[in-house]
Image (cartoon, rainbow, N blue to C red; front, side):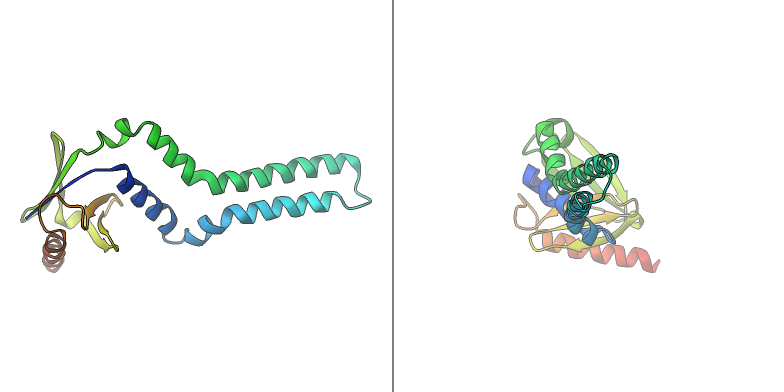
Length: 175
């Protein structure tokens, strides 16, 4: 069974943001961490302005509060900056836009073709298949992601492919 699709930068964005904000145990902190640090910085800034604080401590607290607030702003902007850096060097990191990717299911492995290169992922190395609204991720034991398109496939039926892969993984687990 085989599925083919063309790689796009929008697929990378979808995968990156999904994994960045969807990491188990980190979701709430990654969403609220930046605003939290900004609020802490503003509260320190207000605290430094209270009467009776020595000038030396005011200078230290003002400086610290500005640095904490800037850290919070950088924490918020981190995903956008990472995406911008990858976009600037997308040919190097992702390969050519529109490169053909093929996934083939064999008896004992999943073979992934990327241009002229290919590699095998043994079925016992596949941890899970995570279904999403428009696509799916094949997650390996080493936490690598293999993207499977939903409706953007050039050839093959992604739903049938994922069902067959899920069945093959279940049989592998039983053995």
